[in-house]
Image 1 (tube, rainbow, N blue to C red):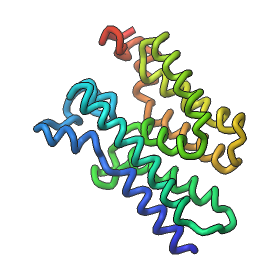
Image 2 (image 1 turned 60 degrees about the vertical axis):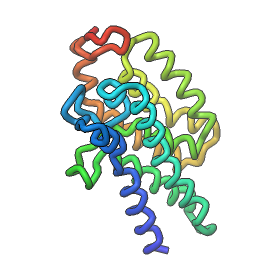
Image 3 (image 1 turned 135 degrees about the horizontal axis):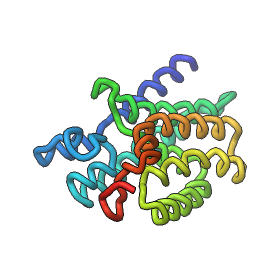
Image 4 (image 1 turned 90 degrees about the vertical axis):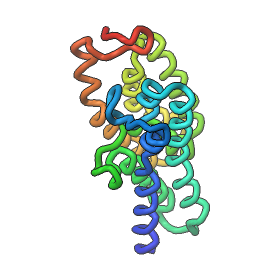
Length: 203
């Protein structure tokens, strides 16, 4: 079981590390890391390459968070701490996106990949999270603000809808990592320099 656990963690990490945003940008002769915010995630791909590739990146980043935990959950036999095992694989996919071995451990901020993981464990939490995200982004004009608020609240949503304690804890860890990866955004928000999706300018 220990070997199975290690292999599943490694495969989950490698799946999460696939940089879809960069692959799509290279397919059209660009490097998304050299334009916009320099991030490989869907928001910057949308900004640099347009809505179609941005949306495709979003879907792929969500999928690479969802399917590893789905497959592990489906293939794993009933064992003690099964839910924790699957949740740790979900954490591994998010870590893979944030710190991909393929790109020298310099990756994205993990929001879409985390969304895929959270969607597997608690769909009702994701529904509420999306409503909160849309409300915050519409009100503030900042995608980063919506991501930060939702990542902070997602463990509470998990708890409210009766998720396993282990998944609530993992959700909290992932939320903390998202905040760490958004440190530059937090600084720009505090200085009023973060670009608004409405105007393309700082606050």
